[in-house]
Length: 136
Image 1 (cartoon, helix red, strand yellow):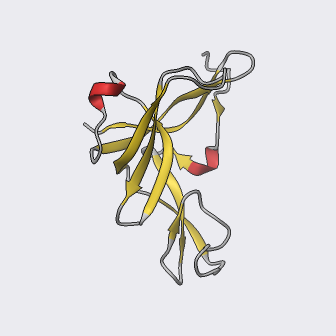
Image 2 (cartoon, helix red, strand yellow):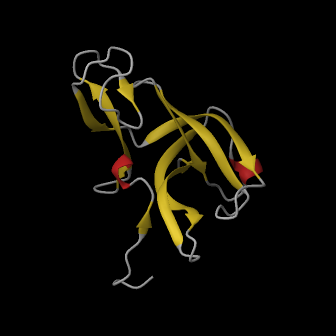
């Protein structure tokens, strides 16, 4: 991709890349409840005092599967996981990448937030978004 081409990004408001990749969640100022993605109001207390804050860079792989058949725009295989952020009581579903999906992923492992290709556009170009990989 040349410097003049713009990278296609899915859900750019859900994460930041500066100074490091972090998901942006919502936290109610009054109830302290966290949500991802951030909502306009806390779905538990219905308070509309939600501020947007970054989640920690690393989470815990709660569960995962290896997707081997998918829609044409999603190159397979890819890992699909549920990632917990225990202190915030937030669980995120996202793609998980690894060199060897069957050997490198395990329940309870620490994973880090990254940005990578999540699917292909109709023109064949890459679409980027947040995803996870095993933490170093």
